[in-house]
Structures are given as structure tokens and as C-alpha cells.
Amino acid sequence: MALSKDNRTVLIVGAGLAVVGAVAAALVFSGGKGAPSEPPPASKGGLTIDVAEAPTLEPTRELRCFVDGQFVGLATLADCAKRNGVATSALDVGLDASGSLVAAPTASFAPPPELPSNPAVEIAPAGQPGAAEDTRAAPSTSGTACLRHTGSEWRQVSGNMSLAACVQALYSGTCVAPGEARYGRWGDTTLRLVPRRVEQSTDNNRFRTLAQQDRQCQFPEL
Image 1 (cartoon, rainbow, N blue to C red):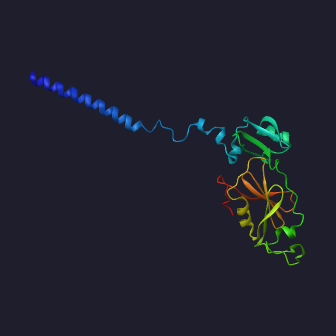
Image 2 (tube, rainbow, N blue to C red; image 1 turned 45 degrees about the vertical axis):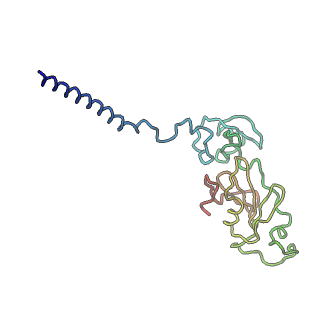
Image 3 (cartoon, rainbow, N blue to C red; image 1 turned 120 degrees about the vertical axis):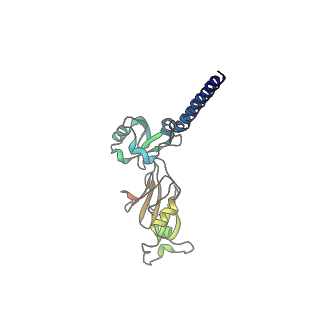
């Protein structure tokens, strides 16, 4: 009879250990399945939308719309483009200083400034007086004067730079918000930094993309 009791005890203890082991194994194998592999949707809301993600916006999502540099209320991207009389691709979309999503025509807050009134003086290397009367041939395209517009005047960055070096000197590490722009000159070419890209123009009016800008405000193409 004692042997029978011992056998029962062994069986009970063994069954208990088996149950505990099964529960522990289930917890180990299922532990990682419920954990999200990326931040939840709530953490990827409007405040993290980058200008580079603008084309993926929901068509019904409203943003702050600007027309002629003035805030006109909330509107979808399509409605904002219609109010501006342009295609949606002509709008810059991104975040303003308050973290609100904004749409505005390219450079609508900062139209091109007037060209230097006396380019010969502005682009001459420092320390050479009388540059206005300099009749030497223009520099080759491999090294040309680079200027920055400060908001009120043109200032020379270098008298001898390549186009790529000029763009890097003017804009590397700098990003602008929708509707804003920063201007520079490389020889007779106007440069303009707008969201996601730097543009160039030979007539200070019609601009085309020169290089794309990444999220670190750099130009990997140059």
C-alpha cells in the first residue's frame, strides 16, 4: 500500500512539473510575438511628417493653406492647390515652427531678390580695388564667383568656386520650411534653396531642380 502511495506522489509531482514547464515554454516562444516591431501609429502622427513624405498624405487630410503668402485656413492639398491656381506638385508641404502641417507655393514667402546692381564689383576677389573696370575674361566654369543673399544685400562667399562647392558652401546643413527660400549666385546663375532641393535659374525667374536635398539637409548628388 505504501508503494502505491509513493507511485501516486511521483505521478502527481511529475504532472505538476510538466504543466509548469509547458507554461514556461509557451511564455518564452510567444514573448516576442505581441511586441510591436515599430512605433505605434499614434507616435507617427502629424508631428513626424517630413516634407519628403508629402505625396503620401491622405487626400482628405487638411493642412494650413497659404495663398500669396497669407494664411487662408485649413484645406486639403488639392483644395489648397486650387486656391493657388497651381498643381499640387507646385506646393511645398511640411511642418512650420509650431509643428503644424503647412502647404504653400514654392518660395511664395521669399520671391527672388534683385540681382547685384554691379556684378563686377560684387564678385571680384577681395582685396582687388577697381574691379568694376576689370576687363579680363570671365572665369571658367570650373571656378566662378559664389555669392549669398543675406536678405538685404549680396555678399561674396568666394571668388573662385565650382558649382557644387558653391551649393555646399551656401546650403549644406540648412533646410527651409514650405514657402520659404534662400538665394545665392554662382556666376550668372541664381541659386535657390527650397524644401527638399536646390534650384537654379539663368533669368532669375524660371527655376529648375539642380540637386535633391536629403533629410539631413545635405546634397548627396553633389
